[in-house]
Image 1: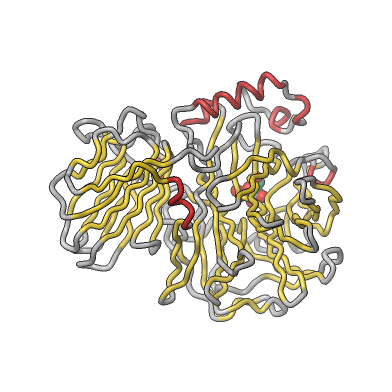
Image 2: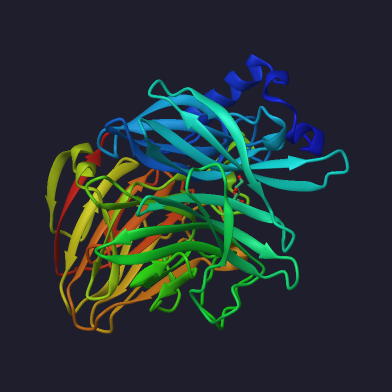
Length: 485
Ligand code: FRU
């Protein structure tokens, strides 16, 4: 089937119920489908949107194109949760149903204001000549999940191109601010643009956020600001970033800087750090973070990348979201940890100490390991009998390195961007790993969140062996994990 422009932007009502049911069944029954992560009900998902706390529960939405594994007419699908682990699907929430979002209800954020959830997102509009106008839209969601009162707040000013999207709504001292990804008209460079409003209706541009002297490439997508232990962390996705500014391997990175605070009026980050990769694995993008009412900082990411195809495209679905992680800053470093409630999915705990960890692991588990400070070896996950096929973690705790290698893990993904990712660790130190496997998703937390490596892999599901390649001095635990949806 050819994905023509007409087809991608066909109104949802013009698709048949049979097609949708078929796509839903394909997604649900796929051997690669995730079972304890948010995943597509059908079609393709990308960015998390509107991650927030409202009416006593956590909410998250994702960008969805329900009719195939392509980026077509986007909407928001809504989930809520009491614990950030078990999610209830509330279905389509923001639909591309007005002129301003005629070609997609693109990414945005949410915030509880006066008993309702205020949604701020980008309406992707194109005219008959396919000329795009990015409208920033405000809408309100009530406690029953009904979205109404869509209003255009502002569009791109003259000095910003059509690439102007992904607003995050922020409140500080009774004033609202929004930060958005933008490309300037003059030089076609990427920026984070700061806006201000006192009433959520009249908006005024303050200017591009100053957070680095370096050129950020040609566009920044999905900027987010979150307070972590009294520091301001800016998470964003620069596109076309020169690798001399900050090195990365994926087609586009998801980066962050840590500052003391943000001076909104002067649109600058006070004392910003250099750029760091948020995730050191393969497929993390468009991370959205927010502060819960208790001040805790949480993030959730799209596990998938723009302009990248995945093996499940052939089955009509693609991508998933990461698990929710809690952010902390310790000794100036950003830590990303699984939330406490993820432990509620664990069952059938087993202590492990031998070289062969499991002959038949299943495809849905957590593995916790503590490896001694003088060990060099390979851990094979999702392996076949002789370990020639596996998702491999190579470690050297003497010299302090860890490599995730998906080159022999099954079907190939984005091989032009490398099949290995390596992180440097303290030398001669114990290595602590929490490894979450959910069918075709691996999330590897290193040393209690000092590094996270996330990656999709597409192994034969019968490859269920977990084993070191030799005798290793370690101890650990293994749990099977429950299904959430
Ligand atoms: C990032 C992104 C956003 C945009 C959305 C559209 O993945 O391109 O910039 O709002 O996806 O789905």
